[in-house]
Every structure is written in C-alpha cells, then in structure tokens.
Length: 158
Image: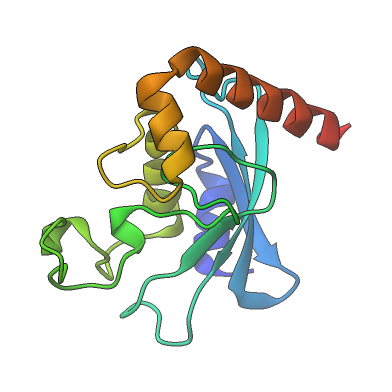
C-alpha cells in the first residue's frame, strides 16, 4: 500500500474514495460521491486516475468510467481542469501558470478540485461544448440530463 493510500485511509476526505488498481502505483480507482446541494447529489461516479512515469513533474490524467454530463468533462469522460494541465504558461493565455499542474498536488487536492468543478462548472472553457451551451441556454434540460445520470450511477452500484 502506498503512503498516499495509507494517508487517505487514516484521514478519509468526504466525497470520494481512492485506491490502487491492484499493485499498480500508476493507476488509481476513484469513486466520487455527488456532493450535497449540487446537481450531482446522490450520484456515485467511478473514475480512473492515471499517473505518468514522469510524475510528479507531469500531471496525471483522469477519466470518468461512469457516464458523466458536465461542461468540463469531454464526452469520452476525460476531465479537463487546470490543475491537470501540464505545468508552465498556457500557450493560449487562458490559464495562469499558477493554476496549472504543480508537483505539490496530491490525489486529495486533485479530487477536491474535481468535486469543486462538479458544483461550479467553467463554461467559458468547456470540454463538452454541448453541455456548456445547454448549461447556459437551457439549464432545465441540462439539469434533467444530470439527474438521469445520477440515477443511473446509483443503479449501477446495486
């Protein structure tokens, strides 16, 4: 068991669980529990956090395995948030270097950022353009789609 995994077991953080996939320290199974008072409340979302061999210099990637509908999650489930972008300046000038990956980030800080992203999407820089447009222009329809995936995610755990 890795030191990070031991720390998470001793001091669990509300809203998620994380553990190694087998003995592979580069692959983590994640379960994010939809936070109270958000559209994702009551959902159970499985994800995979994959660390490159160059970690901690380069960031891991995160992919939801459970269906996810969110402006900052690509249709294939890949999470798009600043702290998972490579370190340094953004060539498009959208993100400050301080918002991007830094070796000080941990599994805990990454997952807390993802939980925060679920409750506060960034529709100015969407990964899922359809979800962002719907969030802005037809929030009722967006909410219905999210409620459907929340129900489906809970049923998948049964």
